[in-house]
Length: 319
Image (cartoon, rainbow, N blue to C red; front, side):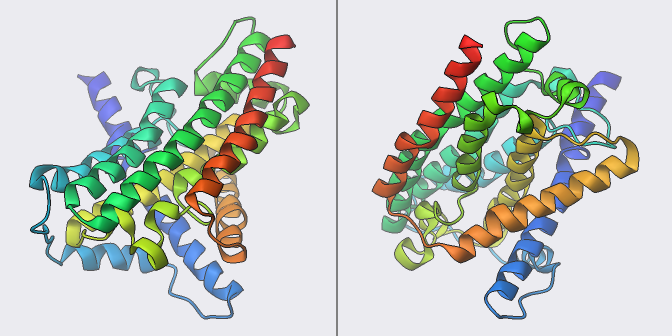
């Protein structure tokens, strides 16, 4: 029973659950405020994402008459959020209890990262909206493009660490982090630089930000799969997006640049690194460049991130 309570606590409290949600919403608030300053505006308060969730909680969820399945329309946001809360529980955070190994490993995390994209496709299809259908097709094409590189990136890091530890491969995030803390971060390993480049392109696509916010492009398809959502159902999607930011950025830190200090200092350093990645890798990018077309994004991922990830994996195998 105590083991089951530990697993449940990891998913609902820390490092997943409320902790991941609070960090994600704080990152979203900093993102909106920094973007406004870059554009010469004052911007909303840092707590605006929290206020938005409270507001959505008091509104009513409207199910469109054109919905093909009311059950899928309502349950899909919950499935997407739960998958990300589970994924957040797998991310090692300095200064917090380590995720129990029984929760899963890096392979489980990769599978969980694909669920929000599938949920958006199901949501767009279940809404019965034309814009939702267009968003469905765009999300599917984008997922086909970026899922390949992230699998190869994970494989390259797992094989590189496993070989250094006297194994063929290791999919334990705890072992990958511990190896880097003892022998140096993968960020400084030239063999993994192509994999790092591929991951840098993966995470804005997975987070759905410019230039890869094609499925939810407001000026084209009016939020795409989410156009018919409102109230608490839309709030669940917003919560999922916030937690996914923590998962993806936290995964990048664990794979390439884990924090060495432990205790409260390690938690502070980890939070600062997450904030820097959010402001420089997300906010500055989406403010500074425009949106790609879906055909451009698909060709881009097949041409650069996929090739870079393949090259890194090949070099790891040869080495």
